[in-house]
Amino acid sequence: MFITEFHYLDKKQGSGANSGNSGGNGGGSNNEWIEFVVPESFDYKRRVALLQYTFNGPGGRLHGGTNQNPFRLDSPSVNIVNDTVITGGWRVVTVDLNGNLQNANPNGWDGIALVVACDESQSVTTVTDFICYGTAVGVPNLALDGLAQGRWRTSK
Image: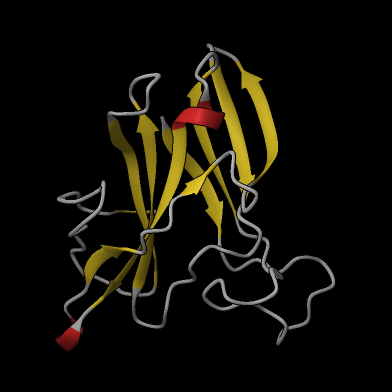
């Protein structure tokens, strides 16, 4: 299971240049979505969540810390806009975060961890993908807490 595509700064049609939401605190004017792939029969609505990370720190050293705000796919803050079964027993799912995705700050990174419950009771979870986005170049980012702790970023 992995993230295939995401958008975090796209404006919805009809939004002006100054009506955007920077950092997920505005009125949801951004078209912010994430697409991921799971096995066709996997109960992703109950067993998949997205966890945000923000990288910041003094002296140009950027470290990843979780915002402690997982997006559960059964939450009202998440809108499933695509659920398509594709060849080979896989399912492509696209979710809209309704303007709540953290936007990368200047000279920094933000990230998303794809978190999956390994059992029906959801007592054991793992991170299957951890990606980062933003403008920092050549910075080796590492998640310092949360479920992705100890993982290095994959820049997409």
